[in-house]
Length: 293
Image 1 (cartoon, rainbow, N blue to C red):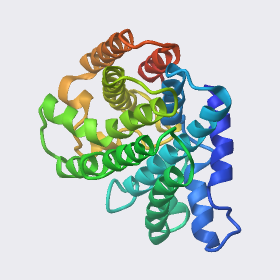
Image 2: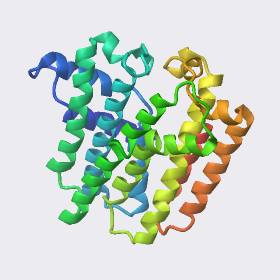
Image 3: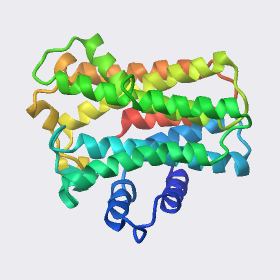
C-alpha cells in the first residue's frame, strides 16, 4: 500500500498543473484539494485489479499511474463540491480546512470543475490500452460512474433524502451510485490496463467492486458513529445531526458491522472465480472493512 500510495502521490505532483502557472490561485487550490491526504483507496484498487490481470510492470504500471490520477482527480472534485455550503456545508476534510474555507466558495466550485475536466484529459492524453476501443470504453466507464447515473446522481438522492426514513434497499441504491460507482470504476479501469480479460472475469471483478463499494460506505457510517473528529479527519456525527439516512440509523450499529463482514465475504467469493493473482484485491477488501479511520 505504501509503495502504491507514494507512487500515486508522485504522479499527481507531476500531472496536476503547477501552482505557479496561471491562474495561480486556482492551480494552487487544485493541488491543495488533491495532494497530501487520503488513503488513495481507488488507486490502490486500480493497481490491484491491474495486478490481477497480470500487467507488465514497466509499461502497464505507467498506465495505472495515469488511471489512478484520473480517479483521484474525480474523487477529489466530488469531495470539494460535497463540502460546500450548498451541499453538506463542512469545514474539515482530511484533517485540514475544506477548500471553500481555505480559499473561497467560487474557487472551490472552479476547483471541482477543473479536476473533473483534468480526469478526462488524462484518460485522453495517454495510451492506456492496447486498442482504441478499450480506451474509449475506459473513458465511458469513468463518465458513467461520475455522472447522473453514478456519483452525482447518488449525491442528488442523498440530498433529497435528508430527514426521510429510507428502507435498506433504497439506502443501498443511493450508495451504489454515490460511493460505489467510482470504486467500481477504479477496478474496471485497472483491469483494462493489463491483459485482455473475458466478459465473465470482468463481471466477477465488477461484483467484487460492488460489494467493496457498499462495504466502504457501511464502515464509513460505523466510523462516523464511533470515531472522534480528530481521528476521522472530518466532522464526526455530521450525517446523523443533519438527519441523513445511514446504515447505522437504518439497521443499527451491530447489524451494520455484520453487513460489512458479509460484503467482504461476498467480495472474496467473487474473486475466487477469477484467474490470476487476486491477493491484493482480497487484502484491500479486508482493509476497507477493518480500517479504523
